[in-house]
Amino acid sequence: MTMWWRGGSPAVRQITEGLAALDAEVFEAIAKSPTPILDKTMPALTRAADHAKLWLAIAAAMAMSGSRSARRGAGRGVVSLAVTSAVTNQVAKRVWRRPRPRFGSVPLARRLSRNPTSHSLPSGHSASAAAFAVGVAMENPTLGLVLTGLAGLVGFSRVVTGAHYPGDVLAGFGIGAGIAVLGGRLVPPIVESRLPSADPLYVDTPARPHGEGLVLVVNPAAGSGTGARVIDQVRRELPDAEIVTLRAHDEVETVLRTAAERAEVLGIGGGDGTVACAAAAALNAGRPLAVFPAGTFNHFAKDIGCADPANTIRAIKEGNVSCVDLVCFNDAQMIVNTASIGAYPRFVRTRERLEHTIGKPLAAAYAMLHTLRHEEPVRICFDNKTVQTSLFFVGNSTYQPSGFAPAQRSRIDDGLIDVRILETGHRLSKLRIMTALMLGRLQRSRLYHEMHVPQFSFTCVDGPTTFAHDGEVSGQYEHLSLRVRYRVLQVFGPLQRR
Image (tube, rainbow, N blue to C red; front, side, top):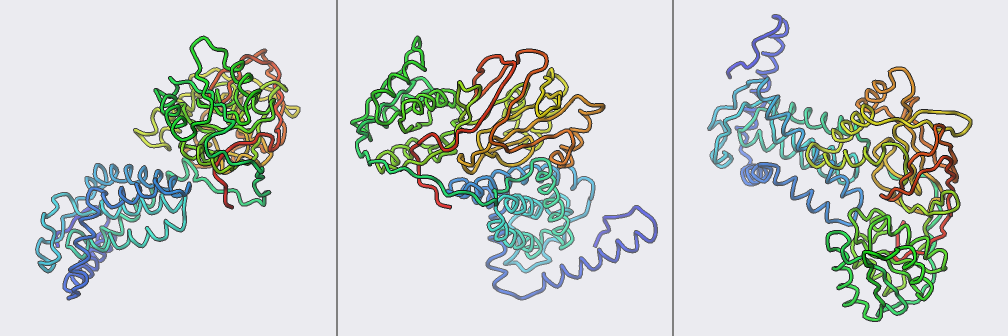
């Protein structure tokens, strides 16, 4: 076998030569093993993993499943795989120039139809397999365990078919798993809350198979035409429902208030800002709310299980209603999802713009750096202390994961406000924050505050500051008081099983 390592001290060379010899002996033993089952299964498996086709197909199936952890695992696994593939093929294979095993060293039935021409170390197939499996395991350990076994078989198939030495496969496993773990440090996986919590509160509501008593307020132009599609679907599935279409000059709050007064069920088709207005109108009128996703992101609709209008329609027909929390600020307006001051909205927009290109971990790190460098901080006073912050986040119920990349909530009825504050008014604070973020230790930093409380108040020291909630700018305030209204809003949605 041609030596691929020539540098280092004599002792290092001796150890390397010994390992290479052992690697070659193991390869020869596998290559000469007369096992018909390997001849039939391993070439097919290694072909399935070419260009990550096997893992992308599995990720697509996971993404279409009803499990949130499976969908998160699919996304994390694909991002880990993409980064690993780039590192392996563009960096690692150029550093370690190890030649492939001799073509024809395995039985004819196992040989690949095309002999790979890239360097042998590390195995790209194995690296991608490990990255995907470990990435999935971080979000869904059960699926990850199954996929880890499959990843091991893919690595073994590379040896059986004569494409790699066993050492190449082990190196690939190490690189792929390492990159997936590093991604988990940059953006921690979501860990479902294990604290005991009350069962969901359901309300006896009559079934409305034809939409009787529903008044739906919807903007036909919302969501680049999604609003118009919602109208068509509701007319077809719930013919007895009344539909009110918003026009450009309409005052949304007035239309919703009027609709709620004559409705048995108030329906809303729009984005999260419009849903927040509808929630206040439904609450004041004592009506249940039916949310039809017709905006850009539809976070609230997704979190109550109504990411598709069909789910809302089914819940109305069956009479499935549960109670969720709202956060009230200054005893005036309602928050259904999140609120913030400072640069948090711009941080989120920057991260979301880049995450599909470079992956969420790198996008979050870049967005954090950009925000800390370019945005003006705000000074706030809370709990008898004054801090300077560039990133201030408030969530209705507990969001996951911890840190400054909250992605979702598993329920909206825990009676808590999720408050996250990142301090920037200390010496070298920006460097300390970025270092903690890159090492996955932001949650342990003294500059990071996370609280889960039933109410929270603060004062903007330097005067009125812009306050945004649910994707809309609410106004400028000097003092803000937030409190949970526990399970106060009735919403239609699928029954939750816990």
